Length: 543
Image 1 (cartoon, rainbow, N blue to C red):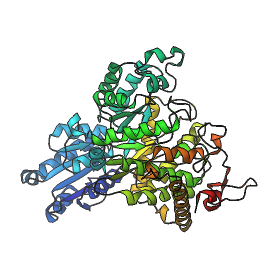
Image 2 (image 1 turned 135 degrees about the vertical axis):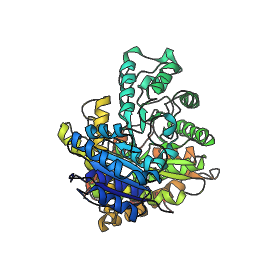
Image 3 (image 1 turned 180 degrees about the vertical axis):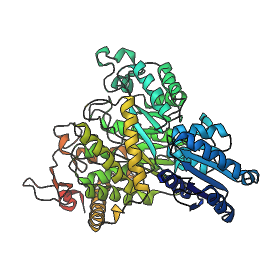
Image 4 (image 1 turned 180 degrees about the horizontal axis):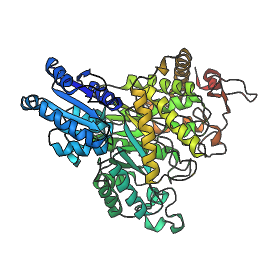
């Protein structure tokens, strides 16, 4: 049976924004809501509570604390019979008034405006009141997605060149209760040479992230997060010793999910010791390892092509191949990463179209044993240096991403173009992201319905199917599944079926494709700049 909440701004208080936000969350949690409006007399609130058979009564007051204390005392006395009969009461107001409300001992829960939406939702869902222990916050990503819905989880990358600074930052971020997932950014030596100290270079210490050098370093970082909203923690899969690292990550930071590429983090991009075909095999083996343990896997693949100016169709094809390989190698919960603004000049409309095309291709793969969770993020290379412009870009990009109804938003901090984010930067970025998300959830236009967006998405799907067919045609008779075969996949890069301009002179790739921006999209072109279709570009690989 649906429960009813009655809410109002009490007495002479006319401030109702907080009341309405509370009721929006109550509706999301399944309550029937009754809004009485601003400046409502005590007797009118209680009359409505009786007439509506309210299960919960919420009142707000945001004026002088002393006046509020007297008014709330009168309210508690007048509502005593309802309270005794089992009706629940909650209060929301400014911190000084909330402090006065606490002293009354009447209200079941008191909000002072600093609470993140998920805490209010948890209260309304009857999950806990108040939230304050690790057990109150789900410690597995899928469970936390369901718990926080309809709000997406927030993730941010964090790792400073000094371990002590990173430990202090993790504590600050966790205590702020703004972030759901801390993605540890570890330095390149830790990614490649953690188990090989003889290969480490002291001059590279801290290059690209926090210099973790021992199991205890990881344990300390996780321990620092055990406060606030107890965020999940995860980190890179590394570029060598993949299974050994995975075992250590699970034991130390309880790695929330694995994030690996399909074609990258090897000698092709200079970030690991493996050749292309060998790294594909190792990445597939790692997918199987995590899948056998029921741990989600993300393939952070498509944006690596987009950031190297590959055409949109190759971005879409790589998104499909990522999901396809995850399913083929036993992953049950797949996190589809969709990085916007790659290349940076992509228009908002064409960005949405590209993401829709990727989702149209991968969604048919989902089933009872393969679940797809959408994760969006702002483009790494898209931030302006100017701080004000960067803040605007963060907010507008996340508002755009909400058109896809993501389960996770990977916030890329507004300082990206200037410096690695500090704890304070991340907390600021989360505040901007939260507001953009709240605005969207309160009623954004459907940006996916734009005919131009739909038309472009359908075109990309049709073009991607041609590219995928060309890859299939490379397979030898012994390859039963070309899209998941390391030999075929590596060959598709070597021959340029999958290609990007920035791969020029790369020993593992062709690097001869030419691209340009056209009407907000990145397209393959002839040398003279005219658009080049996949059917013509790949004619020699098509029957």
